[in-house]
Length: 70
Image: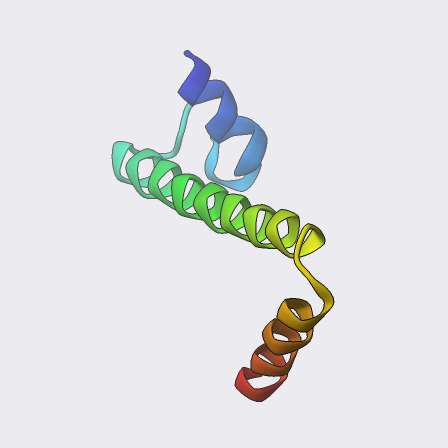
């Protein structure tokens, strides 16, 4: 039930008028997408927290690398 509620809250356009996913395939893909998105957000927060405690030189090096990449 928790997964169903999470799915309905995060992807309301993939939920029918009965409150259930449009198909089992929609549900499986949507839950996998939500798991990947959560992992990305966790990684971003972890990197930000790590940089908050870094020395100035480490932060500058990290920022320089990010600018080079994107």
